[in-house]
Image (cartoon, rainbow, N blue to C red; front, side):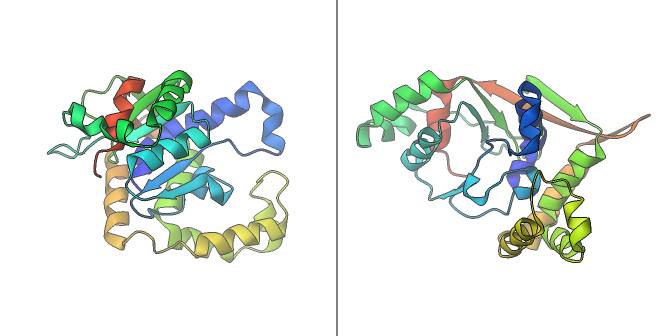
Length: 242
């Protein structure tokens, strides 16, 4: 659920995907992927990470992660920073030894080269939503955007709420040309993943979310910060334990 710390950047990517070609809103979900490394960390479909194959589950192996990124031709990458002493996402120093896996992997050089060639931008985020030495800040006051995050962080409530809706109310969600059968299938898949994260982790994520809100005349505004990094820096970060 730490990816909620990058929710505004994910939502901005979705908005830009539709802005480039508005007709996409009719029948396409944005090509947004979440990579679960070393575990399963909750269903992210409320953030428009869908169909379910777009949540990718991997062991903690940087070579497999790099391969998964290349297989999906990822061009924009957001990585979690190693937690600092205050939980603010301060990246720890990394040494040359942490990219040794690139030379040890079978022809790792080819994946490394294509990654560097195709990656257009990379950012660090903190699960708290506030990163040390940020150079990029996003803010939003949309209740619709925030409800997507709350549905992700409170999966039991979300599942109960939508399961109780009748067919007409489900269709009113406006999920493209989805049929009732499509939406019931989503609920079934979502329901199978309700307990991937323990209650304590969900409470902590909700606490971080509350801390991001700033009160303004327009109401609550959520503010998140990120730090841009070079493509070459991403290799060592892939090997960092989380």
